[in-house]
Length: 146
Ligand SMILES: [Zn+2]
Image (cartoon, rainbow, N blue to C red):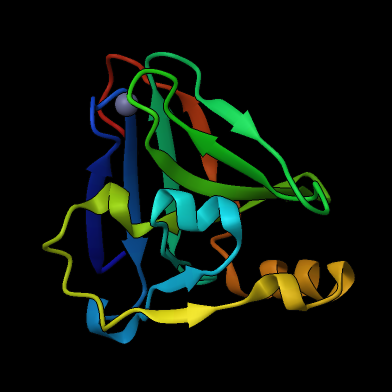
């Protein structure tokens, strides 16, 4: 992947490895207006043609709300929300909270998003189309990440 980015939660327990298919400036982080995402100040990027891996030392916490279809991953040590995931057909889809990548990412300006206005089926179709697909979620090993 031509544009690798690496980040983590605040305490570095959760490590994030991203491969973007386009220049970072091509991505406009979506600041979700649901109460949970606002409480975290979250804004998301995704790339169906990119790659995402999240590795941990201590298993992340997981949280569902609303339609309960998506699962939010956060660090149980420092509380940082790292990603939101959706599992279907044996595949893991996810959108990444750009807050886990620091402030120096080169993304475009953030835009507000209101996914909760879509009916659940439409939201799921959108996730499958737009989110990172075949996301790797696994405990960190001594070996270098893929
Ligand atoms: Zn942490």
